[in-house]
Image (cartoon, rainbow, N blue to C red):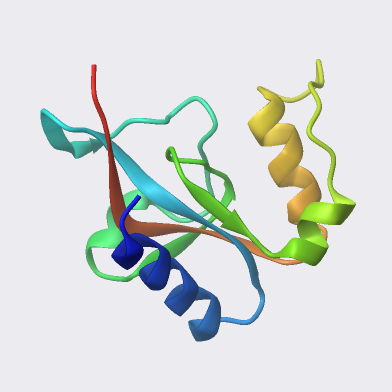
Length: 112
């Protein structure tokens, strides 16, 4: 991870203090226009709006990299649930009790 990715993530927390978790925009390195981590994604706003903004609000997202406020992390559990898509979605549902989740335009790359 580059220092710039982390600094840009922290900037989003400063733009909206209600945001408690920021995720990156994970893409396949060979096709950087397509979002990669669709399994955990639950859009609140369309990810395509990221082209206009630094971030959009989501109900669940990971994108390969995320930063969570420490106090929120301490109060959330990582666990599977049969009622929710995956452990990512289950965790994000808990985070939403404390504030917003933002999926950012900060790209991180997956390799196949």
